[in-house]
Image (cartoon, rainbow, N blue to C red; front, side, top):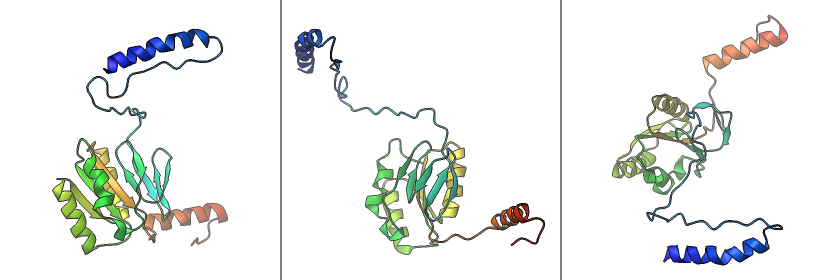
Length: 194
């Protein structure tokens, strides 16, 4: 039936091709995505993209190793990043995690970064039971730990996903203090710095 209709459309388009040949571009008639085996296919446009890593994070979002900035919460995969529609830890539910259970092939592990919150019993109960039903391992960590864990597992070429919420507060590390002192010395001379 589809073959007959396709041939009818092609044959009926022939006179129009001759009439509009010089003045209008003609779009050729193509088959549907359901031809020949009845399945819809997706073509990935960024096949040669390097593995994504998280370079840094802030209260506003994340910076990736390819120079991209992601504002707000994100769902990150080895070669793709999406905005994740979750505003805070309490908004994480089975509905917000459904994306990770639908992926094929199944991910090995989901790294969940919940900002700067250390532990949420309600979240742990909800998330762990939902992911256990879908046979997906999960790590619930602070965003700082989740970024490092995601980068490590991703560098091992494991099929993982990260669901990350930016932290509300940032704690400076020892490296941050040292770098600030170096910058101060470069700008203002060899003073004490900060």
